Image (cartoon, rainbow, N blue to C red):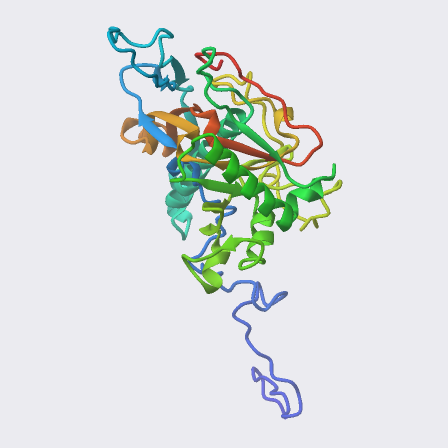
Length: 386
């Protein structure tokens, strides 16, 4: 018998009526109100290593808009005739030429961070944005340098005095077919590296500081044959060679991988067509962009070439003297503060640099290409390549 105001208790055979603390109004998802914990990790996107800055000649630019590099050509040796005065050779050797690298306009990458967002965020929003800004600048830095090395490989030396012409750049075909798939052939790449080493030897280029930069799939095709076809891996053994940090050598040329080299009309990678390479799918907008035009872009004061100029380019081999970089402002990050922060209730995070790049010694530049015809030269004007 039930008494007034009393509750009927369920029998032991009925299911228990649980209080679900995670439900909203005792209905729906039993975990809806549970806290989403931050793991302390963030997906930082494609943080590609930038390598070009340390592989070429870098100079700091102060008190001027450009930096002059002087070329001194070779001279001759002759036998002395007794009684004749020695007043220098009658050909005015050695010949001298110049190359001027101009600083491009200020390159920036920025983001506005709203103060309330920082307060509500449970992770370090500011440092993450700063890191991404740094990546954007570094990526651009590498791409400009690599394009200028490709340009140098297609040009003659600035020293052009008759009888004293200095050697120019080198272009080497990878494979023997017209298919882009030759660019991924380990055997064809090894042969191209030996040809490049021989060409630089014959042109008097120093063996110190020789490197090759390939796209990742080319690099991994090569490391699978370490110990074969002349590949050398004496510096490190085991899995270390797979990191792509230049531990594999061919003919004394250290090999690096980069997503920033001009590669078959894009940066770093190319799928479809006759490449024979599998598209991994879902690569995003920034992995596979077409090469932006560099000949008429506002802010570029050096000729970096148009997009079509790199349709068949598939790798670079060079020595330290191949290109030069002038820096007026090294890569740095600035953040607003004070009254600006009060007015806008937030800060602008700005990354900036001012630099310019161009080839220096064409003889130290080698471009690999996968095509029946070598890519055409561009930016041939001396002394300024504009």
